[in-house]
Amino acid sequence: VIWKTPRLPPPPFSGVDFVREGRLVAPNQDGDLVDDNDGDFVSVHETKRKQNEFRIVLIGDSPVEGIGNTHHHLALSGSTAKAFAQKVVSMKDGNGGDDCYDCVRYWAYGKSGLTASEIEEEMVPLLHRVQNSLVAKEVDESNDGSREQHTIIHAIVLLCGVNNVLDTNSTPSSFYTDVHSLIRSIRNNPRL
Picture 1 (cartoon, rainbow, N blue to C red):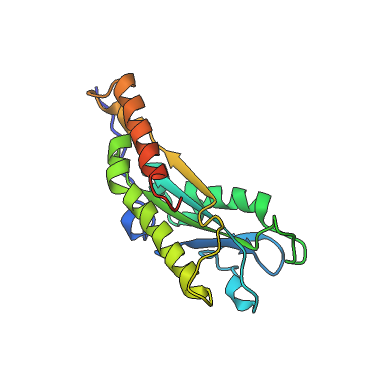
Picture 2 (cartoon, rainbow, N blue to C red):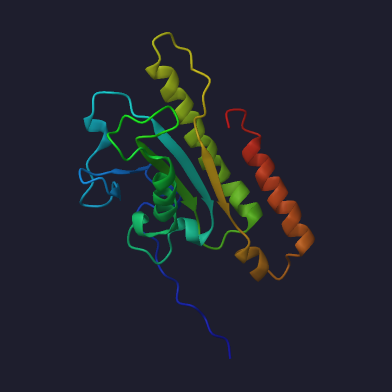
């Protein structure tokens, strides 16, 4: 007897269709952390000063894609961004020190069924696209066309392995090789 799990859909705008400018997690007027998909979200862009964003990119397979959730803020990606926000966002008066951030901006690039090597092929280019667009934005926002030397993406979360285990051709050695190649491809972008 073979039992199959029903194929659940991802939330809208998943994988390669994830919102290009990312999603935000920030304190609302009551000081609660909310995702910009929540109805209770107040845009951090309503303030006049430049926002200090903590930026995180998640890449991987179905948990990153958000399979089985109706919205990203309910999925692993939104929960991870909210957990980071609990640690790094200044919740007081919004005037935290240099080590405090106003919000967390996140991107989640995942696709159900991908192995480590397929994540490298399909999702890492999306990570590099985010990085390149952030660098271009920083240059556009500077007055002299230069870019300050600071971190553009603060954290990258990589999830993989289940599909490698389910692949009958995968071995521990091939998984090790695939994961190391994946990590190298992430690190090979000189802007990360």
